[in-house]
Length: 378
Ligand SMILES: Nc1nc2c(c(=O)[nH]1)N[C@H]1C(S)=C(S)[C@@H](COP(=O)(O)O)O[C@H]1N2
Ligand SMILES: [Mo]
Image 1 (cartoon, protein in one colour):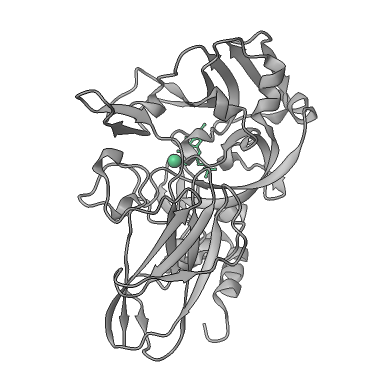
Image 2: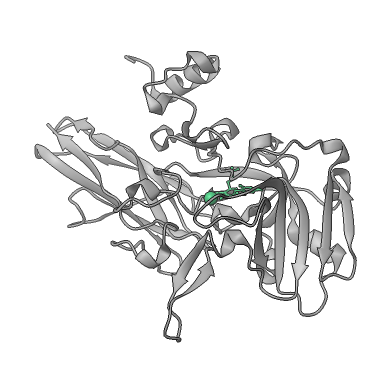
């Protein structure tokens, strides 16, 4: 690896046929397989390099097999509590407008492998998150045409993928992947219907030909292979916001209730150095990573190299924008030999900071408590 920078090494690996890629060094393979079928792939977070994650390195989270869809006879149906039921071809949708904007998307289960005791679900480390440039139009432009009736509450986004979930709990036979957003969120600029990613068309794994991208929210609302939008006059209670992707909440009543997981939480993660790395004392090392928040933006990133006793403010390398991450870097010269615990924490522009301890009411989602990286200084 002598003169090859990590970035160059990644590029070199990327041009090798898949079978020739080194299998053992996880950080140099394309993606980590968390489940083979359906394919669920994680970006090795140590490989983080650019503000925009290249499409072929963007994590993939799919509950069911990728549906076979032909863009030519694809239809998007918009129905339910609307004055105008719509059936749109892909061209019809594209004619309603086009724009491109970056949005960061994180799977609600990102970081699950760090939970103790272990919980069910895909065992993501830090890499089920990415930032991409999405090309499409606001969902609101389609809703304007469909004209939701008075009393509209939720906008259900349904994908063409289907399957039965066998346990925890089982579904009543095969169901499509569907998820709702409240009408107010659906009308915001950051709720997109996209057909492009990073300058190219959406790939099948990322939802071609059409998907939702709900900025500021965890990925579960960004429905892929989107072919049906249903406006409802009462809150939607589908599987993926009740049985799955829900938290416990303790409102005024005596008992916990479940509410859907929605907005991303402030979070920062260290890409490098990695856990267990040996660092020479007296020599500077770059501590590098990303930080993101929900519907707001990142206001502050702080790094601790002494397990949280002292914190240093780290300047992000780009001006924080709403609903997108920042990359940050800090040159640290470890002085004393021995183990060191690195921690990073993010505060958003509403003053919310990552919690130190895990809140069990979040079940296995929205994992943003502080997770140390332990290194050894020699
Ligand atoms: N139709 C459909 N849409 C879906 C999913 C799915 O399984 N089916 N998974 C959701 C989840 S949980 C996440 S985190 C994001 C992941 O999007 P990506 O695979 O493009 O990264 O897609 C969401 N949209
Ligand atoms: Mo997810």
